[in-house]
Image (cartoon, one colour):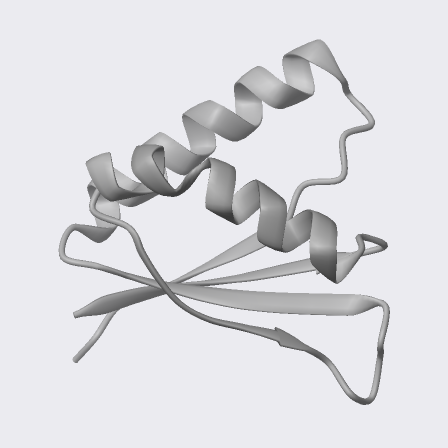
Length: 88
């Protein structure tokens, strides 16, 4: 199983959780399953969350497409940094 680790700064935990809940069905359609969400205790301004996925390439394409659309509408949007992790 592959993973996608997301890091976002400058967002409220409640807002991140609400966004993830609102996007849950779209994530599921793309094979993304949210596993955990954390606040960095050394940097409370940073929130991390992780998904598992059976198809990392499909998930990457979907995420990149969604992020491109968001940035097209708002070039200053605060999007998470995505790290795509391949299981070995």
